[in-house]
Every structure is written in C-alpha cells, then in structure tokens.
Amino acid sequence: MKPESQRVQVVDSHTGGEPTRIVVSGGPDLGSGDMANRRQLFNDQFNDFRSAVINEPRGSDVWVGGILCKPIRPESVAGIVFFNNVGVLNMCGHGTIGLAVTLAHLGRIGPGSHLIETPVGEVRVALHEDHRVTVTNVPSYRFRSGIELDLDEDGTVAGDIAWGGNWFFLVGDHNEDVRFENIDRLTRIAQKIRGALEQRGITGEAGQQIDHVELFGPASHGADSRNFVLCPGGAYDRSPCGTGTSAKLACLMAEGKIKAGETWHQESIVGSVFEAQGQWQGDTVIPKITGSAYVNAESTLILDPSDPFCMGIG
Image (cartoon, rainbow, N blue to C red; front, side, top):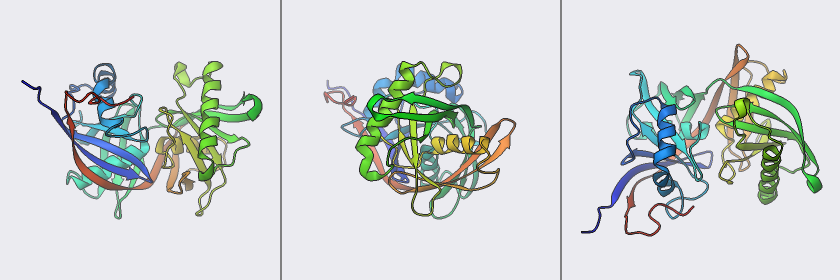
C-alpha cells in the first residue's frame, strides 16, 4: 500500500518584498516548552520538514518560514519558530510583520496590540490599517565597534557587531556602491566579510556566530540610509531587515547619532522602507520597527513520500 501523503497548510506573504511562509497546520508537534526549546527540538528532529517547506521545488533560498505554535502565556496570541533554507533562526523581524498580517487574514487578531512569543523572547505587534505593522522587538545592543577587516584585493572595511534578535556585522566604512544593480558584487563582498569574521574567530557575545552581514550606503525615497543584508543561507534580504534595523538603531543610539524616540528610515536594496524608533532600557535599546506586509497565497503543500525530492533540494 502506498504511504499517505502529508498535507501542510501554509499562508504566504511578503514584507517589503521579502517572502514569509507560515505553517498554520500539518507541521510537527514541537511539544509544550517555551519557543527556545521548541526551536531546538525543530532543529534537532525536523530538519527534513524544514527543507521540504522552504527549499526547492516548493520554495527557494529567498524564503523564510515559520511554524505557528500554541503560546505558553494565555495573553499571547501566538508562538513562532522561524527558519530558512539552511536552518533555524533566532528571530525574524520581517517575518513577524508577515505573521501579524497572516493572523489578521485568518481572523485570529484585529487592529491593536498583540503579544507574540519567539525563541529569543516576547515581542509585541501593533496591527494598523493598510497592511502596516509595528513590531516592538527584543532588547538590542551594540557589542563591539570599529572592527577592521582586511579583504585583500577588495581593501579594508570597518564595522560594528550588534544584536537585534540575530547577530550582525554592520559595515558603513567600505568602498561599495550599495545599489540594486550591484547585488552580485555586494553578495560576494558580504560573503568575504563573513569568511573573514570566521577566520579571525570574531563572534557575537558568548561566542555566538555572526550570521548576518549588513552594508550601508546613501538612500533614496527620503530614507536615511540604504542597506544590503546577506542572510545566513546566502540570499539577500529584499526587505530592510527588521532585526538588522534593530541592530543598526542600537548602534546609532550608542553613538549619539539619533536620540530616543527619533525616527530612522531604513531603505532596503529593492527600495522598501522600514520606520524605526528606539527607547533606552538600561544599556539596551527597545526598537520599534514599522513596515507593511501583504498576504499572497493560501496553499496546501503535499509531501508525497514517493517523490524523490519530497524533502526539498538543499
């Protein structure tokens, strides 16, 4: 008898051009622990499912996925574990904005403020009109500043290490033209930066890997800067990157370049814009990131065990 196919219900959206796929049913049982424990369980036991949902032939390197989980606290509307083409993520800002519009699309939340549980802590989303969402992110901070890296024939760059829910190396001092037309070169330079960080043993706090690289340049559309963000799986972020903008905000406030409550407009490499504001909480910054997301599709993924590429390519 042929084994039965598994059916997985997903809702797809994009935030500033960056896609998110939320698994709303048919995913693995991750237990009843907190989201950090469920993230670890998903990483250890369900890597095939991760690949099946997000990699080709159903997805691509660009996609970020999330498994919708029952939250622990009764006042929370959802828990979430994010993942991409190569593994699990700590947090995802654009994905949280996408999650909020997905929950609204499903009729599970309405306009107002809602609590979401993530592997790195609780965040709050405010659902506005016209597809806009504000995420109050986890405490963010600059860990180290002014780190120089020699890229051989590509010269020297200097940047900061900061946490915004993921670890970033943020590079403002470089020789690159941060424009959409230069994506191939920017990708190569960012990969080279990440390799240099690994080679020199430069990490985030407690030895955590710096898995995102962010380059900044002049903006258009009235924004304050434009960024190029290389994600862990090798794809670039089409959105301005919520956790990256949080990390940038923490650096700007640490340097005194913007004040608490002042708005920073961060443009992505494709032209979408996030608005960011921060407030000090001790030595950390609590960022608020506002962006727009749109639901693209409701789909049923069919995982047919007779399909040789059932669990994805990659």
